[in-house]
Image (cartoon, rainbow, N blue to C red; front, side, top):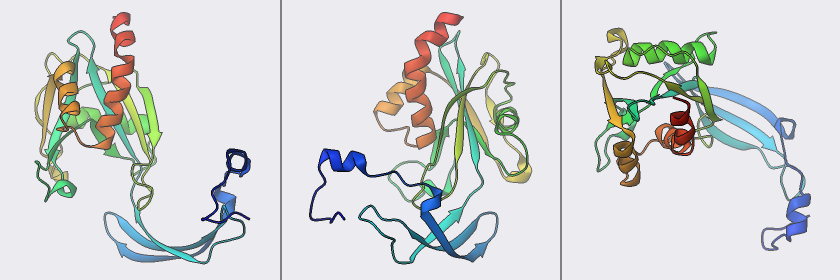
Length: 216
């Protein structure tokens, strides 16, 4: 058995097995709120690296639909198509709560992530997408939320893209902006771009951009 005040050696660390879903014992799932999103209290026990099982642990989990995001890139213009909209979760900071993001949406039906991605891109930007290149799948905040995101890149012609988009019945007020990659990268470096989905997508694009441009 290992103790917190006794650091593991490298050999000991590499010999500790990795846990999976079989190493968690669900005890109770208590609904706390039901609305567009749900909040539950989850009581569980789980195996410990020190050996044995934990005591019952209670965590509040924000139940969120899985989501997709699509970074739209115009190879010919070396430009990125982004959406800008108000985000309530970004209020109260020393920067604007209107954020630049990839086109995105929730998977709240039996549609495939690819189908949702194409629909959301059309609703939010007016663009039609053909091939979707998967960038990553990831949990944005697994300490408190069960949302799982599939992030794509799609190549588009941004010549006629722009303006205000979104569904009125969903209270969407989305400004579409077409920005040169160099300007977007400068915004990343100075901290203007500050949401995980766009940061991950842009780091991927910075790596893949030369090969994408070479194909055109």
